[in-house]
Image 1 (cartoon, rainbow, N blue to C red):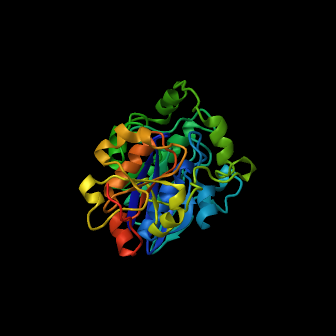
Image 2: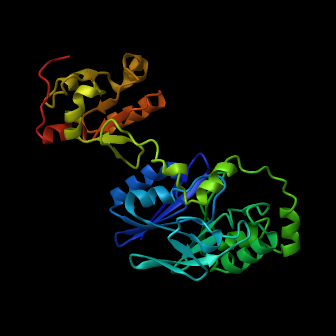
Image 3: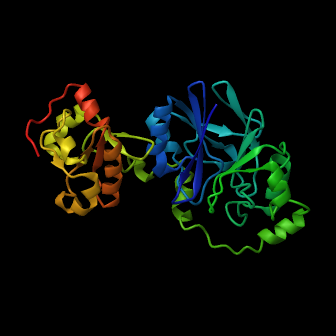
Length: 354
């Protein structure tokens, strides 16, 4: 089985990819991270069957609708949430298959009335959303929250799993990635040890937390499964050339595509000067700016025109792409495979020298 834990730094959200037999599920995808998730699915050769949201989030917008638009994946979340556009309403005891494996749905309301926990078939791992966090839990003071209900859910449906079961939450704000049933039974200050329902309710009813900053945007959007108002197209898709997003976050352009768009872009070769005129040659119209000089010479480039970075194999130019993006260049791509790939495809090179 393929398992990946992905992270959105803006909302501190974990997204989980599970794959088997060429089929995959994504748990708690984030709208802005859909290009990353699509890139990873493509690189791993996986077909996305469904997105699963553990609840209607208040701190980020789900990527469910956007992924459905891109690859036809089913949108699955709790029937109790009452969200529009969900084509697979989930209930306690439901089974979600992928490849030869499956997840079992456990209803764990209390943070919201539509919270779910997804348990892997062999009970070796479970995905708890905000119902149980690492040494904590989700708040219970809005979205139909109830401390009494959450206490019963966590104790009855999550901490009742085998002690060795690994627990993966929807968020962690300290960078901790995983816990276990045994740890949370013993060390969770809100729900572990000898804490009873009265202790828990008294604690939760006196947190006095501010509402999440994005709640007014996120909750209505997530009740539409992430569909923008007016069915607007997903943002941030480059329109100046057909590009491929790699899991590293770098946009790549294929050699033939670059050849077709060469007159419209700035080609920046980030190799050293001797490489520029070696046996691989260089691209017609390319500007030589070695990677070591790139940030000092970035002012020589036009931020309003697309930039394609080039090197021998695509490694240094990928780094150059990241540096240029951080420097404010919004249209940047890396030449896939670099000059090695260009030469392999027998595409033309320039005959001029430095």
